[in-house]
Length: 410
Image 1: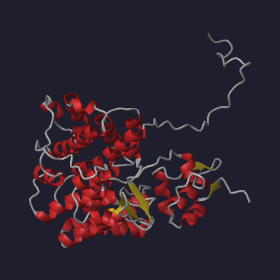
Image 2 (image 1 turned 90 degrees about the horizontal axis):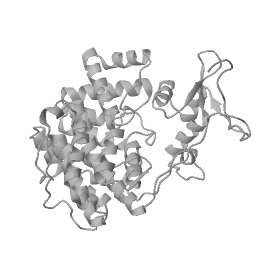
Image 3 (image 1 turned 180 degrees about the horizontal axis):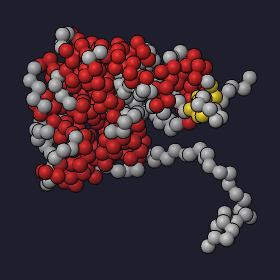
Image 4 (image 1 turned 135 degrees about the horizontal axis):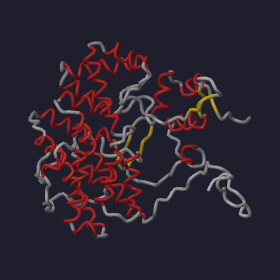
């Protein structure tokens, strides 16, 4: 029996076992394509997109059976596995590692350092700071502005030996933490650099920063990581590859979800009633940044662990209580559970940081994965060059002239 090309909203929601608001949220995040049916307001939903989401839920990534794998680039990687609601760094459970590991130790694992520590005796290359020209930039934008300056002064960046690239990667990771924290210190672990720069002194909050960095160190081929790999595949150096990741991370459908989650929590706080605020958003047709994840239909494990730890450390904190009430309201009305973006926004709110610092924390952790994927791509020595499925007008025969000007025109 031929499978249909399109489904109605009710059919698509039933296939996915989700509510209609959740279906509309998937459409807003470009996970499912929809098209208007005729001249009315009714919309139909691409059945192949629905099937792809269902198969990704079951961990099916075989190019022979998974439509999403056939339609998108499928790369080999030994860094991170996502399966059955958990994820693993080189075979080791990331949630268990997050209990005690530092970002540096995760980096050496992801980068396959084989016992060598590239983080010893690090020093930053010199550069000229424009000072006022950088004022007003977010921590992530500051990284984008300054990494090329450091690259120009770091001659080792152009070395193609594996050992040199490990040392450059370690330098970049600490540089990013330093730039995001606003401190010039290079010889502290990343979570302590951030804590010092942000004025966080209590050990519990410092530990939460460390845990968040580890939880977000890598997450397979998300858009920013894929971007980094594409740039690395051209032979561009690590500074250039990582800087490309920052650009992708700031998109509203990727790291920008952290800022949207922060805005949602603030909105619910101003309203004084999260349920009413969430209902009002749905009435206006607005989505919820920081909720749902196609790879975790049962809930994002990063959010579960980070929010659980926050509840242990700050059980009566008003910002945490507000965030949890907001999450409960969104799940009640949409069926979606909080994801890692919401957890980062909540962490920042509880320990007194702004949304731009929450994204900075995300970037500081994810940089370890970006570097690991770039190193893996260098070793594969293969240009990433996907093909396009052409959807334009049918080609004209070679014996037919190209379309000319309309008759009578010049």
